[in-house]
Length: 152
Image (cartoon, rainbow, N blue to C red; front, side, top):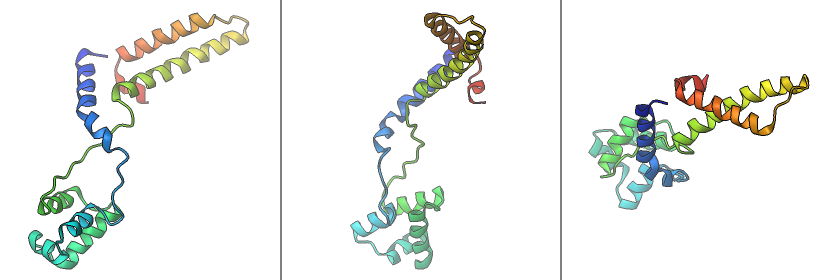
């Protein structure tokens, strides 16, 4: 891995860390826009007027949000009309550095154990310590190369 690539990965991990707390957050059944609008006591007619839409178009926007089909641009406009901030992020299930490390380990293990299995069939098995050292070496080589190869 290049130092620049490693730095970029770690910076992105650090940037996304605060969003990890939102990972399990479930939106209200009606969607955030409808829930917040109702909590504020704003009618759909009032929201439509703020956005320059017909009432039915605004109701469609809320329905689309609840279904997950609203566009980000439209949701951003609705959020702004509600004096809210739209926060959009893809939140990795594990740190990106860990994902790269796990993938390299998996590929290295698969490659080395495939050879080790063939050798064992020929009564040329190596020790577990040697196998683990070979896995570590193969992993280091994978990480030193182009990471795009990890995902083929």
